[in-house]
Image 1 (cartoon, rainbow, N blue to C red):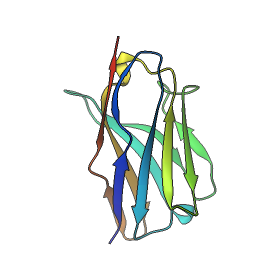
Image 2 (image 1 turned 90 degrees about the vertical axis):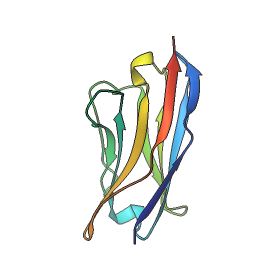
Image 3 (image 1 turned 60 degrees about the vertical axis):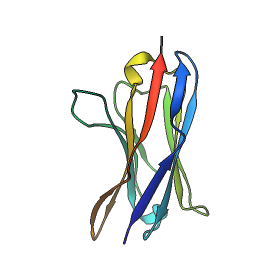
Image 4 (image 1 turned 45 degrees about the horizontal axis):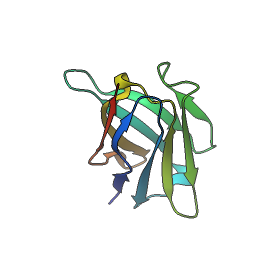
Length: 115
């Protein structure tokens, strides 16, 4: 059973940074497409960033140049470094794993950016 546990969310001011972590069990991040999504109140869930098994990152247009997705294979953990945060980045952030056995989600972590 694949399990994803996010952490690192919080309340910050505009311009500050946060790093989200997603600890993964039941699959290896090195062979799994891992992604971060977010959902703001009243909006659809959107892709923030993804990293392929080969290590190729992909970003949503609204976060390009500010967010960086990475992984630590030894810790089986995926990270999302978020810099220069804006109030419109406020959302619940979810870790996602796409594996041969299906798609899995974490419980989410709240990120709130005040202006």
